[in-house]
Image 1 (cartoon, rainbow, N blue to C red):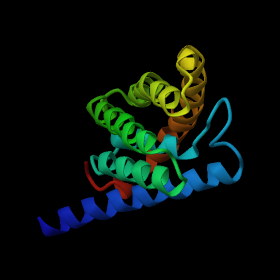
Image 2: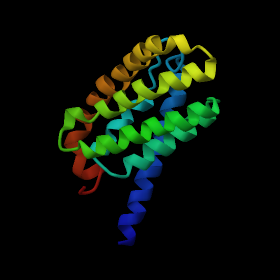
Image 3: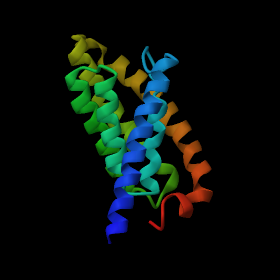
Image 4: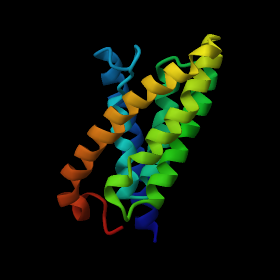
Length: 163
């Protein structure tokens, strides 16, 4: 029992740390800003397919990444909430591998444009932001996430215990 809880916490912490690092890598290459934002870390939102520890892992990682990269408070709160919603729904869809990225794409596309519009005071930009945020999420979660799913599947039992 103790080993299981410890392994769960370690997996969640590793995923959170990897999320933060990948967010910084995206920012370093200019991918995390601009019209279409491509956070490499968002590919990790498919990990709930493999382990429940990924749900708190990507959520805490998103909170930390948003704080450390200087996001506005509303972006930290609601961006992390969008990630949590996506991760919980992805976990619920774990029996359907290639549907796993959809909840994060949808939650971010519906929530983040309103946050950005409010933070930057441009309410008429919501349709444009939905288009650009959605495109970035399709690239990050849909394409890169599915590549990650495919790459990790053969190592599932070794990497993620026996979930």
